[in-house]
Image (cartoon, rainbow, N blue to C red; front, side, top):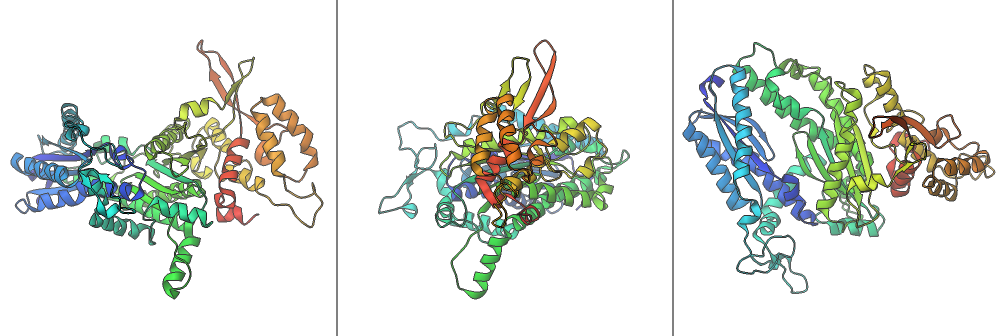
Length: 577
C-alpha cells in the first residue's frame, strides 16, 4: 500500500438510526439479525467494494459495525465504493439506512487529512438532510397487510415461522433479519466473545425463568465510552504536532482498532465474571452429554467501537454492567500506558471511562422504549463527568420499570423528589453510582471525591453493594432475634414506605426500630448518623438562591435486593453472607 499522501480522497460510510433499527421488534432473533446486517455494512461490504478496485487504490482506515473510513486514489474510486456499499445495503439489508460521502484531501499534512475527514462527516449529514426517511421506501398505497413483527408493510407469508399451520405475514425487513445465514454468522461472531451458546429467542428466557434458572425480568444494558467522540472529532490534536499524514493514519487505525478490541475483551471478561456458573454447567454438559441444556442469558446485540448494547437477564444486569466498566477501564489503561499511548500522546486520559444505563423490564415491554430508557440512563451516568472535569470517571444508573405505562426517565425520577417548606429537596435515590476505583480519582477536587464517596457502587461502607448485602443478611439460627445482623423484610419495607412521606416521618420510624436491631449494618444506609438521609450538595431556584439537597440509599438498595437477591452481589460481597 502506498503512503498516505498518494491518496487524494476520503470516503465515509455510515449507517443511521442503528439502535432504532435494531429494537423495532421484541423478537431477539430479529434484533440480532438487524445488528448483523448493520455490522456487515461497515465491514464485509466495504472490504468487498475495495477489492473490486485496482490494487493499491484504497486503504481502509476505520472498519467497524456500521461505519468505515477509506482513503482512495481518485474521485471515481471514491464514488464506486459509495455506490457499491449503499446499493448493496439497499438490496440485501432492507430497513438499514447507509449513507456515504467523499471529500478531497487538499494537502499532504496530517491536518489536511483531518480536515478532509471532518468534511466527509459534514457531507454525510448534509446527504441525510436531503434524503427521504427510510419509511418512504415502504409505501402503503395501494393498501397492504401489516407485517406481523414490524411497522413495515408485509411482503409475503413466512411459512418458516408458521405455528399451527398459520404463517405470519412478514415484511422484507423481517425476512432479511430472520435469514438463517445472517443469524448463523451473527451467533458465530458473538460466540467468539461469549464462548457459550446464546438464547435463540426470548421464549428461551421465559422458559429459563419458569424452571428457576433465571428470574422473570430482562434488561437492556447500554454502555458508551466517555469522551471518545471528542477524541475522534479532534484526532489531529491527539497525536504529535509534527506528525505526517502517514503518522495520522497509523495512529487512527491503531486507536480505532484498539477501542474495538477493548469492548470485546471487556464484554468477554464481564460475561465470565457474571455468568461463570452457567458457563460451567454448559461446559460440563458438553463434556459428559448428560444433564439439561443451558444457554447463556445474555446476547450482545451491539458491540462495536466503544458502544455496547446487550439484552440479558435482569437479575444480574447491574452486576454485568459494573464488571464491563471495570474491565474496559483496565484494558484501556494498560493499552494507553504502552505502545498505543505513544501513538496518541495527547489523548489526555490514563484510561477511558464508561457510562452505562440499565433498563430492567418484563419480557413483553416494548424493546424500543426499553432501549430509549437505557440510553437516558446512560446520559444520567455521563453526568458524573461534570464533577470531575478532565479526570475520567465511570458510572452506572439503573431503573426497574414496574409500570408498563412508564418508560421515560424524567417523570420517573421527578416522582422521587420531595420538596419541604424550607425549599430543601429530598431525592429518594442516589443514582448514578460511581464505579471507577477511588484511587483513580485522587487528582479530583475534594468536593468531587466526596460526591463519589457518597455514591460508590462497591467501595466504602456506604456503597450500593454494602447496602444490598446488609439487606440480604439472613437470620442467624444460633442467636436471639435482634442479636444478629438481620433486619426483617417487613421492617425494611416499612422504612421504604416512610421515606415517601418525608424525612421527619422516615427518621421517626428509624428511631423506633434502630435500637431493636443494634447489630444490623445501619452504617450502610445511614453513615454514622441516626438518619436515612445524607446531605448531597445544593440546588438553585429560578432566582439563583441555593437550597439544601439531601438523598437516601434505601430505595436504591431495596430495588436491587428485591429484584436480584444474591445474584446482585459480586463474589466478594456474596461471600460475606
